[in-house]
Amino acid sequence: MANRMSCCIRILNEKVNELISKQKQKTAEHKKIKKENSTGSNIETTLLDIIDQDGLDLPGLNLMLDVLDKKKNQLEQDCHVAQLQVLKDFLSQVRLKKQEQLDQLTRELALINSDLHRVNDKIGEQKRHSEYPALKGMDCGDPNGSQEAFNGSRNVRFDIVMSIVNYTLFTSGRQAVAANDHGITKEEENFKPSYNASDTLDEFTESLSKFVRFTSFRTLASLNYASDIYLTSSIVSSIEFDRDADYFAIAGVTKKIKVFEYGTVIKDQVNIHYPVKEMVCNSKISSITWSSYHKSLLASSDYEGTVTLWDAFTGVKSKIFE
Image (cartoon, rainbow, N blue to C red; front, top):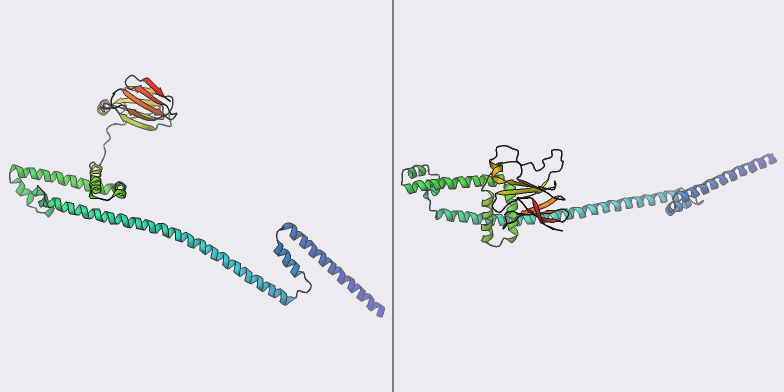
């Protein structure tokens, strides 16, 4: 009986030792694999060493998990704070830009209000000193003003004609302002940086009057610069009239300068127009200019840096500058 008991204990010890050896071997292999797969993972190796300690019990493991959980929450919170800081910096920059734009708009609005006040004062002053009574009658809405003028003298009838002309110009001008508000705003912005006196407003008024003088354009003639219909590129880079506006030349990427007679192009009923002279350059033409003193002298420049002087009516080169 004692021998049997001793044999059982010996076998049990051998099994326990075998299990312990296998576990140690497995742990060693696990550590080796972890070190090979993650060379710099010292934290993971340290944790594995702590876990593999024989003295680690359940309370110690729970304490370790609690510490790791707190560390995880702290890292997540720090990451979220960093993201919020980035968002704060971005919104601060956006707010700064928008505030600058608002300040700029405020300054521009103040200048516009000042200009509008000046214009209203000038309009009132012009009305008070107007030489045409019919204008005042029109502004006041007097329905009998026009009839009384027609029944008056020749001078009064002239006043009526002037009133109609001025009213037509004023109406067309307001329509053009409404239709081209964007372009006029750009024109006014160009004058605003140097705004320091009423002279600037008068200068802008003159430019505005030129801008609204015409409300539309009418096509007089159309020219085809590229005679070859299969030519894909036909950009016209320059158009120039001679000193008397009798002839004009066009040039571009087709390396050709074509000279047309203005009167013939305008009067010709046929939509196909032929040049009176054509010159061919060695490279694409960037610009042409006609002499203000010599009617036949024409200069051209190309993308190779060459400037050529031409006789526009014979098509002969006179000089070449490189």
